[in-house]
Length: 336
Length: 276
Image 1 (cartoon, rainbow over the protein chains, first blue to last red):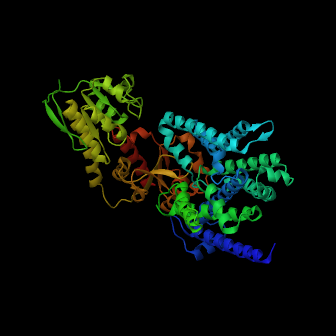
Image 2 (cartoon, rainbow over the protein chains, first blue to last red):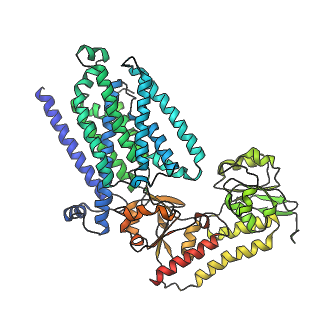
Image 3 (tube, rainbow over the protein chains, first blue to last red):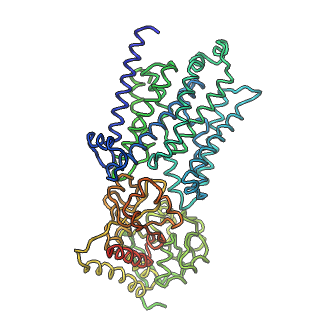
C-alpha cells in the first residue's frame, strides 16, 4: 500500500473515531430530558445501581438504546455493502431481497395473533426473524437453477416476492381492526423498547456480519470486476454468492426483528462510505459500519428529542437526515 | 310519539343544519358511540343500521350491519335512511361521499366532557327524545359542578392513561380527549397532558420523570406482567405501589353515557390513592 493512501486511511480512521465519540456523547445527553456531559460522566462512573431517575435514564434507557441503534446501523450497512457489491447494483439494499417484507409479514401476523407477550416479549421478533429468513430462502429458490444463482433474476425475484408479501401485510391490516396502530408502529421502526437482553441477542449477529464481511472483502473486490472476471481470478463465485446472501439475510433479519423496518440506512450508508473512504471492501467493511452506527444513533437521538415528550418513528429521521446528505454528495461529484 | 314538535332544524358539530320533517324512523349509525347514545336516549327502535363494532347495548348487535370502521356506503343507501349519524373523526373518509349522495347526515365531533353532553342533546333532539336526552346530559354538567365545588387544596395524584404497556413507547392520553377531562373531574392530574393531543407515544424517559402515582390501562390484567419485569417500568411509583388498574376501554373512549360509569370508577381509584 503506498504511504500516501495509508496516511489518508489514518486520517479517515481518526475522523470516524471522533465522529463516533461525539455521537455517543450527544446520544447520552439529549432526549426527552436534557443532561449535561459532566452529569452523564458522573452517572457512568457511579455505576448502574442508583435509582435516581437520571441514572436510570442513562443506564436503562439511553445506553441500551444507543447500543441497539448502533448495532442495527452496523447490521444494515454491512448487509447493504454486501448486496450492492454482490449484485453490482446501486439500488440494492437489505430490503430488496425480501427480508423486510418477510419480517413485516411475520411480525404483523404475530401481533394480530396476540403473541406480543409470548416468550418474554420475544414472540414478535422471533416470528419476524423466521419469516424474514424464509422469504429470502424463497427468493433464492426462485433465482437458482442447476446450482447457479443468476444475479439479475435474484433482484427481480426479491422485488416480486417482496410485493407479494407487502400485499399480504396490507390484507392483514385491512382485516385487523383495532390492532392496526400497534402493527403500524412496528412497521415504522423504533428503538423505544431497547433493553440489555435484546442487545445481548443482537451481538452475535453484529460480530458475524463484521467478521463475515471482512472475510469476503477480497471476493467482493473481485466481484466488482464482474462475475466472470472473479471466476477467472480463482474465486468460487457460486459459493461466494451463496454465503454473501446468507450473511446479508441474517444481518438484516436480526436488525429488522428487534427494531422494525428502518429504511434508507442500508441503501445510503454504503454509498456515502464508498465516496468518502474508497470502494475497497477491506476498508469499506468498517467505514460503512461506523457510519451506519453514527447515522442510526443520531437518527434515534433526534427521534426521541425533537417532539418531546412524544416520540417520532426513527425511520422518518433516517430518511430526513440521509437523503439531503446523499444528494449533496452526488451533486459534488456532478453525477446529477 | 314523543311530545315534541316536528319539523325541526338541527345544527350539528360541523355547523351544518338539517331539517327533519318528522321523527326519523330509519336511522343509520356509523360508529359504536353514536349507536350507544341513540339507544341511551330511547331512539333504539328507530335505528335500522349499525356497524359490526356496535356491541352495546346487546340489542344493537342484532341490527343490519353497514360496515365496520370503514363504512359500506352502498349498504347505507340500501337501507333508505331518513337520518345518518357519523363521527367527524372516525368516519372522516366517508363523510364527503355521504354528503355527495345528499343523505340526511348529522356529524358529531366531541373532544371534551361537555361535548358529550352536546352529542346526547343533539341526537335526542334529532330523534324526538329531548327529555330523556336532557336528563342524561344534565348528569355530565352535574359532574363538572361537583368537581368545581371540591376543595382545590386536596393533593392531586398524577394519573397516566395508556392503551398499551409493551412494546414501548406507551400510547398515552393527552389533551382533547374525554379521558383527560375525566381524570381532572375525578380529582387527579393527567401527567401526560402537556405532551400532545389525542393519544400519542410518550417516550420512556419522560414517563420515568413524570412518574405517575396511578396508571390506568385498557390492557387486560393478565397481560400486565411486562410492567413488573421491565427494568425501567418496574421502578415507576404506580407499579411499585400496585396502583395499576385495567379498565374496560368502552367506559373511557366512546363518547357515550357510559363515560359516567368510567368517571365513577376513576373517582374510586383516585380517592383510594389519596387516602393512602
